[in-house]
Amino acid sequence: MRARTHSPHTRRRGATLLLLAAAQFLVVLNTSVVNVALPAIGSDLKLSPTGLAWIVNAYLIAFGALLLVGGRLADLLGHRRMFTIGLLLFVAGSCAASLTYGAGPLIAARAVQGVGAAVLSPAALAVLLSLWPAGAGRGRALGIWGAASAAGGAAGVLFGGLLTSALGWWSIFAVSAVVATPVLLAVPGLIPRGVRRAEGRLDLPGTLAATVGLVLLVYGLGSRDGSTLQSTVIPSAGLALLLCLAPLERRASHPLIPPVLLKNRAVVVGNLLMLLLGMVWVGTFFFLPLYQQKVLDYSPLTTGLTQLPLSAALMAASALAGRLRATLLPGFLALAAGLFWLARLPVDGTFAADLLGPTVLIGVGLGLAFVPLTALGVNGVEARHAGVAGGLINTTRQVGGAIGLAVLTPLAVSGVGTAVTGPAALAHGYRRALVGAAVICLLAALGAGVDKLRDSRTGAPEATPSR
Image (cartoon, rainbow, N blue to C red; front, side, top):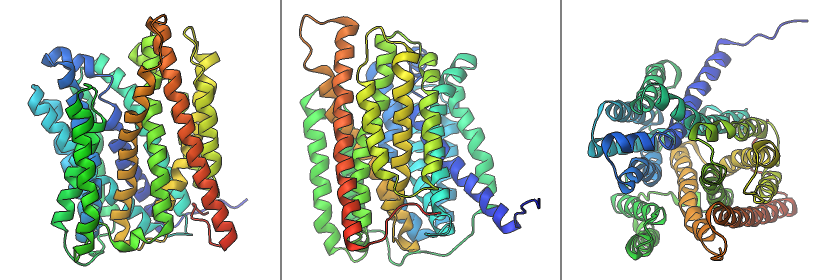
């Protein structure tokens, strides 16, 4: 049998895809790698719980608030250029975080990491979309992209525990810099230079309203102190600024979000459903570790290890979704089923009997839904708008996560009678939150089903990954 050969062009495209996937891996890795190291950081730097929260929030807020702007800059200034700048900022922030010894400098370094990630991620997705046009292997490329995201989340929990135990918390940032450096060096040889994709300039009023609005919204919704200022006033101010964005954009000669994107039904539907998926995704990965550590008394490292099957299922399903059609509705249904199953949450639960099955099903559902939603959010988008479309779909997922925690957390802390205390009370609250997440999944499945039915009646082509 004749062996299959691959042309140099095919091999180079494969290497480029691995490069882009590695960048996405690093972006997601740094959303979770610090969580396990927080106790060690707090002990060394004498940080309060509020200070520790900022070690996480500095990255997440900068990342979530600047994704849209990062995508627009990639379209205006060139995808490869902004990919390189994003990597440089990410490496600089990682090096500074590993070398600093003080709360303020560490928080600032994490913010620089977040800015780098916000520039890097949409530029990387734009490069992927330009190299793999629709119908020419884009589905497989997006599948690998989704698998890299899942791998980053899993590696963050696992490596955070291992590195902190073996070398100290500083090493989690040093490893990010070490891994990002060869990716940076490989850019000139693997990513085409290209040309400026979009005409015009950056819309400063729209950019300011979007960035400040997203910062206030994400920060306020993610607040855990229960004060009226942080939990109500700040996110309301952020929402007001985002509502002001529409009239600002109508008057702008070069709007931050090109009107053609908002007239694209696939883009609008993809972002609405991604908002719901983000609510469920972040909520699941927030409440599951709490149940494992506070109810089952798992160590952080054991918690990370027991989440590996979920992450492996997510990676496999993401890769598979890139090769199949119409996985969005089955994905949401599988995710809802897994969450309802997981919501049993017995106080004396075991991994094999109570966690393994439902978490694997959750991983499959997340993977089957995430890849087609990403494809839907960029479906029919011209190459010159690929950066802002990628920034928009990622921003939607980040904002969805903040909204999800704001909606699900009250469910987890309410409705427990005074007769129920300790681990039983916690387990009861987590059950309510997971049932709430499952209901959100069913709403998303309903939306996906209605959209699919509309396509079948109108004869419109499905906006899903293709072979």
